Length: 185
Ligand code: FNR
Image (cartoon, rainbow, N blue to C red; front, top):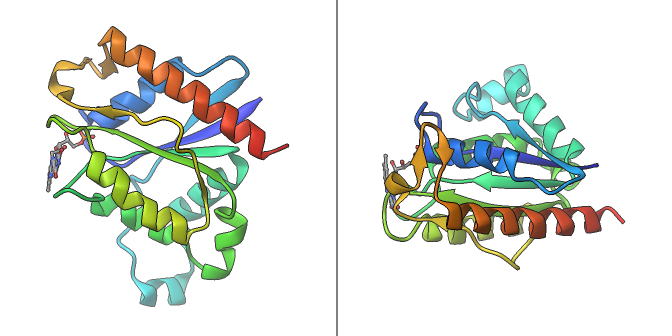
């Protein structure tokens, strides 16, 4: 069983990116699962607090989930043509202490996808993630891209409803899951 961890970078209830993650859970290839991680309880990073109290429970949990997963999918919104702060903050926490980076991220299969109401579907946020992931020494999957543009027309009631986009999501998930499974061999 190949286990993929999905992390949505939006905290809002009606999030398109969380809806994309939930739809993806239903479209995973046979023999795989997509577990939803959460960044909701992760506070703003503060080195003083880290030094005094160590990592918050929500960060410890997310780090464990990344370690357990064969691959990680970031469902990233785009803010001001880049990475949204809440998701970057969560990943920054999981990169602490730096001595754990290789254990948590080293060689781990990663890919980014996302949805936005605009016409470019998070393409710039996805590009911005590349330099972060390179620093964390993850192994990026580049064989597929998924930008869900015009998200307002693509989702209904917390799920992706556009059939063509669902087909593209299914193919993306199949490709990434095979890549992640391959890294384990
Ligand atoms: C946005 N949004 C946005 N969208 C986009 O495609 N490119 C962008 O640069 C931005 N910039 C941006 C900045 C800020 C501060 C906000 C709050 C929003 C719109 C964004 O894509 C939209 O709010 C999505 O709905 C956010 O994702 P979720 O919450 O639906 O997952």
